Image (cartoon, rainbow, N blue to C red; front, side):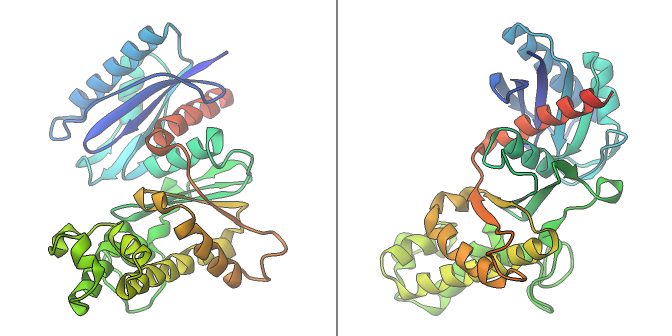
Length: 319
């Protein structure tokens, strides 16, 4: 059995685990990122955590993988730019390899997540997978014909910034009508508050204790379950936006499966069943040939570190 270190670098925490070649996590832990410090200090803490966990597991890892937010040049192991941790052109792979004494592979955090789900999560058994994360924004990763697709300069797969409504809502990227501007959890909350402003008698007000600032991604769904018309309209509208973006991805890549991650997925079939129906209706050529399965991701917060370990496994095999 071989073992690999998987690291999920976030703006708040660094999560790390020792993973075997079947995807089993032997040990894991996390530390605060302390993102306002020089990158060498952060790298030193990450390396110390990785070494400590390997000692606790009693194994000698073959290599290290790391998923980082932002634009990552995976061929050089360089974080080109990351707003979350305010890095620019940081040679993280080289620095960690020097500190740990092992080969280090680096990719974007969404890429790591899709690798994890395909390795030992809901995407296992599929060769073509699109992973869509519904959070503050809409992120994603692609595995095509069994291989991670990163695009030129490892800067591709920014699926949240495909336009689903020309001239629509302004996105944080500067364009209008992006998938992210309509289908992120942030967008759903904004849509919920807009509906509350129009419908003073909506059950959403009671669910929020009379304060629209308390609205979250569950509010409209909970109101719909209570029979509230305004909440039902919000949910239906949100699913329509989500289906448009996913149908576009399906018609470009025709994956075997689309995996959805993020807190909204806790809605389960309340979200997935109508979403599947809408996407199937928009698949080019219909859904009977080359059907696309739409599933909830299964690894939760472990997807990134499992995928980073899988990346290390793949890169070490190629050496």
